[in-house]
Image (cartoon, rainbow, N blue to C red; front, side, top):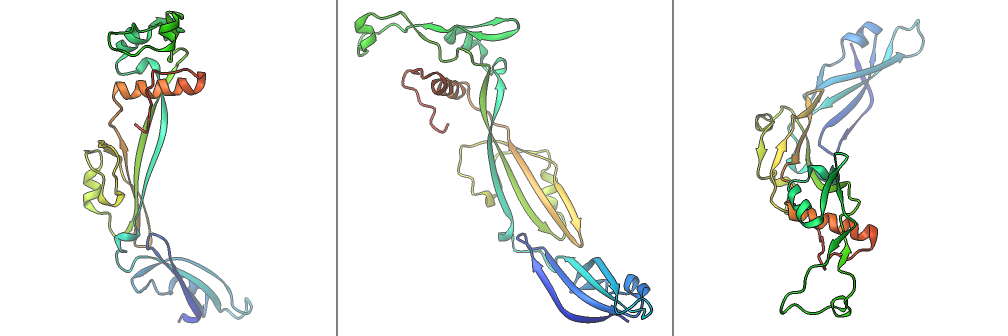
Length: 252
């Protein structure tokens, strides 16, 4: 019969999953491998590691047994929520309103790629518009094209990740897979611009009696054409030191 020796130890991870370790003394290796308690406080036996107690001839073994899982579902306040924002570069040819680039920024196709002229005609001053130093001095009728040399444009992309541990995979999470949703779960405390989100298939792994679950949704609402243009012009301004008519990209 397996006898518990020494003090037991346990730990609870950040998501609430329990890991309990006990040390037993058994009369034989067979007993060590087959007759340890299968559950402790509802936690299933996960792994065992043993060695001979005194000598091989003695027959007894000391065994460290690990029990892992959940006694009950942890408080939802232990769940983790993460918002990951990154910029993804899209080819300029895939710009949603490419005709705007042709009309307003002298875009043209050459060798199957979208190109831009290095200069644009200077906008004509209108009645009531304040004069600038350039218009008063009659300088060149062209201004640098802020999109000259642009090959890609940045599109901010946000991914929402919700991590949790549960005894069972919630059916509500399973039924959300593949859906387009208008609002993230409340735990994200999301206060940014209104977006739509695509829910990916769940990532889940079971150890002991506990499921570790990762729910992920990514942004599918894109920027408007005007917002993308502002980002592009701001990017070229930083690279070339060009003015952009006073427009600022802000955080968009």
